[in-house]
Length: 232
Image: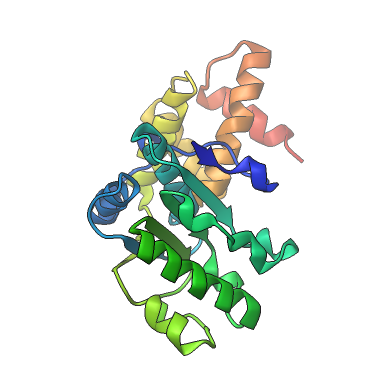
């Protein structure tokens, strides 16, 4: 069972591997999926710029673990700052631990020690650990030398951003998942007239989904043009 909401975190709409466009990240996703199922490498470090899908993949990993009858926990460390490092206590008993945004706790001695201890306990139990950060392990501003070395163990992947065609593919896949029909021409129009990062594009698609349902209209270019003009 995935342990997410019990910790009091606010999570976005559930992410799945099916809604992720592999693009240049195929090998990283393959190894992450194996890790979530308890196979392959025990520790994987994912890093990349904003909107490269780090959070999406870690959340998707918990669903993969669920389907493999493995317990999993996802912790977004940007929110965990309101808690204490005690949040790491006993997490080693989960089959899969996903820690998102570990750069958020770098440089804080109590958090670094807590993560170091958790890493060692997970390793001793042969469970799986996935972490994500906005920089490579070598550039992570960690003070504790032993923890810094641990972050270089296992597999490390830099996630690559989507190009425009891949963003269009992602949009059409998200639309299909919502039960919407969107042509490639319409997806091109959205990309040309809105913010181009995937977070903003997915947020817009959710708004268009609601607006089209209320208006009983299809997602055509004229409808989307009108919607964008009315937005504040």
